[in-house]
Length: 200
Image (tube, rainbow, N blue to C red; front, side, top):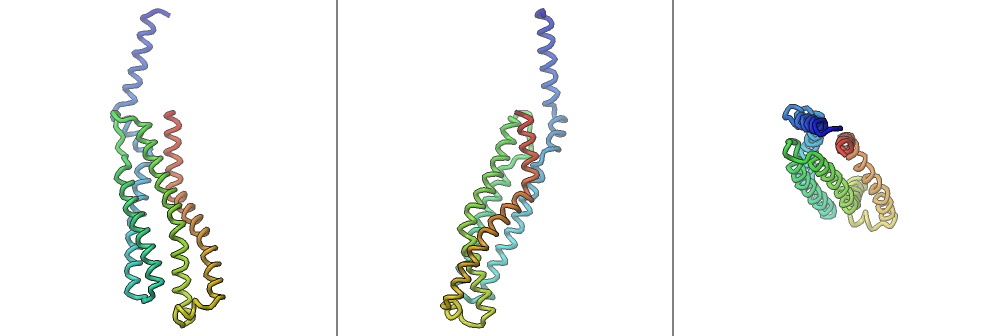
């Protein structure tokens, strides 16, 4: 193969690369990316996080049990942390991919960000679920028995039921949260991973 043919093939490859990086092509590619869906779902999650946190705060005015207040405080702190962390992820998720940026790096950064965000929440939640489950049990027992919390909880049988309730609800809540994450974000993250693999 002579030098002229090699030169021509290199020019053709350069032309193809330039066409791929044209604004229109980038826009078409962006429209197929699941980043907008991920950001939209994240924003919906933030909204519901705020609503649920406000409901927890409002319960302080209707329930006068310090044991339940402790549980609500833990849940409010946890929810507030999730909301702040979700806002941070929302701001750092860049859906405006431009030719000047490394496409693969941008997509990988967003993918890794969502994966870390979800896993961290699930791990931290394991410390919060027992408190929430215990608070719910105490509140339900107080309303159901009509006794004071002390009288209700000093019964060894009730303490056993409390332990069983926490032991059952914690793994149920953990796997339910994991399923919910996969349901809301999983499909879009798989699509994002598929784009990253194609770029590889």
